[in-house]
Image (tube, rainbow, N blue to C red; front, side, top):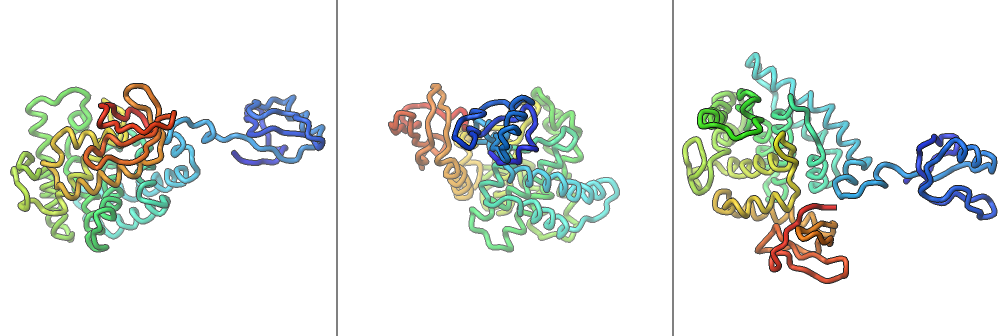
Length: 352
């Protein structure tokens, strides 16, 4: 809610609290939608200021509240402004082989992240971003760099390694910009030929960036970000320590960003659904176990205190995380009873 001068009132605004005269008599009750008649009445009673409701006051879910917040509005403005600053040199590189300045991209990172007070808030802000269809791949790369900064902090990387990981985030998927959108964003299942062509983006990206003046880890992470610890990845089926350490982390960044961004075939997954996906798809075997555990634990902890809806329809508040089942926390039901969702086989369907 906010307080404004009465002369700023317009029909359709909503009273945020009772408006009384100087004797305490209610002139306009809270929740009233102002009309010209109400405004004239307040003028007659010489009411100088009133409290009105804002969009955020009507938000019913956690992410709606984030989206309507002043902080997100500022973040969105900065993101949209610097998106083009990021995109321009990348397009120049793709179309004219003009080398880009990685320091310029780091300036983009610093200016966008400055609008988020905490790493957790940055992830919430990114969750609420909806890129246009023609910018989805560029947004994926920019978002990955922003997410890489968060994960690098959580993992306790040195300042130098954090910067390398962020720089990797900007370029590791650049090969996808050579893949037609008809394949990248196809709503149905890819056929075998399309799937094999899509897999080439890692090698294509590597060939594009390997001669640029970048840290040696960046081209290797570009080539290997789809390799998996158990050897099930591509393009070379590498295992364990044969995979570049930055590729191991950026692989988690890549899949997290994909799951938390809207796609033509699904809505964004909420944090507990993202965690569940890793748990249910052999994530701790396929990704670096220590890195994935640290990242998912931080994501789960960031949800403590939030109201949620369970799969059985009940509502609750996240009380604590479950170390053995990070996607299924202990919650406090509306009646005050604590419920271990893992023990009773219920899941988190929505976050309020």
